[in-house]
Length: 385
Image (cartoon, rainbow, N blue to C red; front, side, top):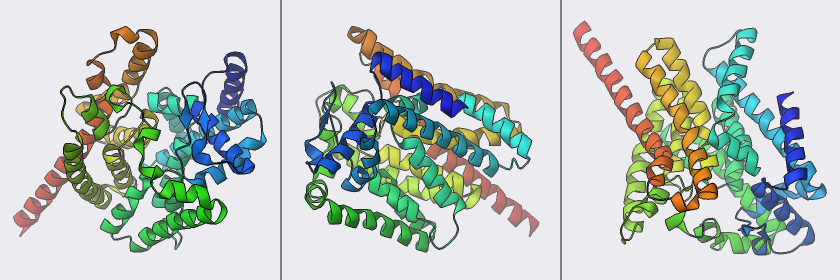
């Protein structure tokens, strides 16, 4: 019912105001380009002149959107996205030891009410982004799939958006070698399909357009919404080259973060490890929009469960503060830039940079707690001897 209501509301809003769902329009125009056999990377959409920045394989998947009117596409996409969010929360609640069907349904509904207004989630729905669907696919693949095909869905997802490639080194470090192989094969399969069906577009994309961040973000020095390390560095005052520092930080955060993610998986479970790995990917990516941070959903659910299990006041406050970070700063920044642009200034940098800071602190806190747990265990073991 929630999904149907959301779809109806989206349909009415678009019919009346013709605003929003700009990314979905890009997906749809990519599908149109495939059907009309025109160049994907000449597509320019809407008043913001958005370009198609995804792989040829992704465009092939988006072709069904070209078969229906934009209003119908919006309604269907919002309904599917909300259903995906509900299924994701249901799975997450089940993974944190809530086994009773009625309790699980209650917790799922409460978590859904708390998570729906978060800025990354609402921006995903409002822009018509695919992030929640891909998040669900990866969680199911890497935390529920233990068979011989585990990893292949993650590879296919990486063929749509490249950032999930971060899970391949994670799987190698955690010694899930077959899953890493399947993820690599799934990704290469999407590339091969693209070259087979759209050879010219594939040559353009893999020939360099996939690395052209200017197609994604035209002016990084004035864009407050790139929530990666690189995005925050661009907003720092002063005229200096950010690239060397960014690469150095990526090397440190990438290598150290993957080790922390693998350590987390070993000590706290696969879901926690996968979530930590996703945070690493968001931090080191050249561009991480707020809607990419839908990985805050499993992070909040896992931390809320831990805080409840330990009945620790400080951890409960931490969960509330993290929820607040992913709720208000995005809306405040958006309102400032669109309603009072003359008031935008450097104060927006720490406001939106709170995503990056939260990600870095999450990795540091995980390393601290896991290290302290290991020290305690060794101390007890030596005392027992």
